[in-house]
Image (tube, one colour):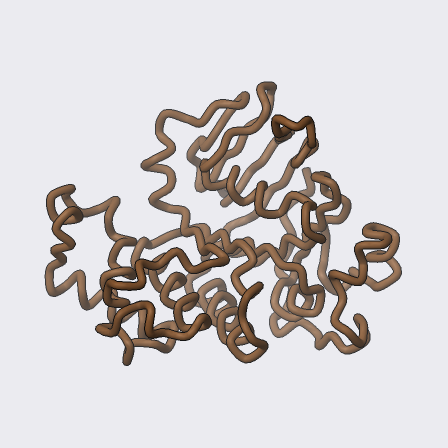
Length: 279
């Protein structure tokens, strides 16, 4: 079986000399739901952007493969990355919707890799294609808002519209970069419920970066923890204890825990799946 994601020896150094990623290797199996956990500056967002082929790593023997397609190798973005991205849905922290356009139009942009350029330029979609968009919005619970301007939706609704866009895209891997960072607790729960439902019902691999330990343990059977660009834990969420977090993150622990500590964390909603072999 082809892995959903394979990363080998990935490093990224920015101009100032700071190492954002340091020899990261990672494998994610199809249908896994994995939390990337870590404090600010740990490398979570940088790793997700490398997986999507938005940026290239340092020159060397590194490689990133998603859905069996090469995304980058030896510090260079692969020539076929545009077609490879058709199977990768990316959910941004700030929604990445065009506020003046209807919600349905924003969602249907997920079809752009599959429709002719002239139709995408004119935003012309056939009736059957619009129905696909409406069905996707129904799956995330906001089909009643399909023809409203995206700017009229709450933050949580906009994030669910962004997730619906990945459904229209038929993404086999969803990368979610701090999707609940700017949301209230109820909106956060609905967004995470939506991602978990898509993961279970469609067998889509979901990798979601989070600050919140309690959310990671509740929704993700597997946690990959980053500190200073290195993978410092990769294993079952149920085995990630407060003591381990303190050992891994030191003074950063306050940023990762809810106010009343790990003891308030509810158990995971879904049974852990077998983990991919650690790199």
